[in-house]
Image (cartoon, rainbow, N blue to C red):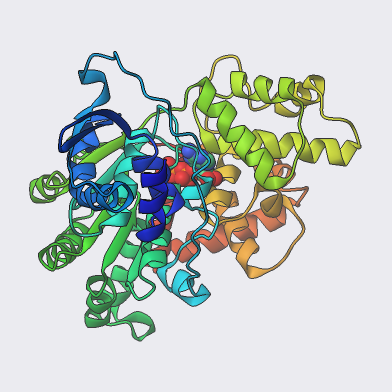
Length: 449
Ligand code: ADP
Ligand code: MG
């Protein structure tokens, strides 16, 4: 314990690095001048050895006065005869290195998505460890890092966490997070020289980074010009040893329309996946959310949610929010009955995702960082009116919902408002390439096949 504590403080190791790499280490044997230390996962043996081996060695010397070398072995590859006492959590202290607000905004990072609020479980521990390793040593080990997994499982959260961590360690690092949609739209603008944004400026913006995070790369695939430009961006960054982090819904080898040269580059680094969370992880995530929001919810209710909502963490969070909202609205206590009532639309017996107006509203709201309530509200600011009109357009196009029904779904608007909205978007799609790109992406989000 003393050695670890010393190492943490002397070398200003952050809490998350400490918890992930150092706390799980155990002394297996000390033999003359050699300490043998166990590591839980084989995947990161090499990384821990390289990153922390030397630090551990010199700290052991400092604390004990004995010179000794350190060797690491994987825990489940040795006979478990001598089980030393676990180190416990008491060693964690806070090391805060404030990052300027403007650096976070320039990097395009969401302040909520940090490693501290990310719950690690069996479904995501490799992706978490890989993200942390990249955050600690950007450009040095796993380049690119490719994270894949289904919707709402934490890819975006991990990417932002990497960005925050790097800025905390090095406030001058140039970090840029973008969705692949934004990348494409800016490329379209640059080619057209729109908003005085030239191809040269585009290149400067994307190549002049220490760390580039591109989220949901599946949406640029199939577009040759974007793949071409991304290929050059990738090469420029890679050759300069800058870190690239990519997320996608599928691993590179399953993305059919991905050009071979990009596919092979994506596989140069490390590819990790995130799976659906198991029951324990779902419980832990709900608990974390409860703690963060300051709710106080009965254990039975938490269990009810964790049992019934399985595939998607965004839905898990949404369920909790919905229950709390209903209880405040009706001024009722939060009970399992209330939870059943609140979630009856979400929990369907045959977990099939139909394309409904609700789904369209949900996806469009998410895409613009709004809530479904915003979309259906009477608010008239531009930031909401336009996405609302996109909902009208997509309901008509994808679901074939009658105008009157669309109006009803959107908080009781009459059909002339709906017609106006649909006409507006139809006209804009024709003359605005970036909007038509966005619409295409929204359609893929609503109906992934
Ligand atoms: P994805 O990008 O894979 O679609 P997100 O990163 O947007 O998913 O995650 C969806 C929501 O679930 C976010 O609000 C995120 O904070 C939350 N979330 C996902 N994974 C975790 C986790 N392991 N711990 C805590 N919250 C999580
Ligand atoms: Mg995402």
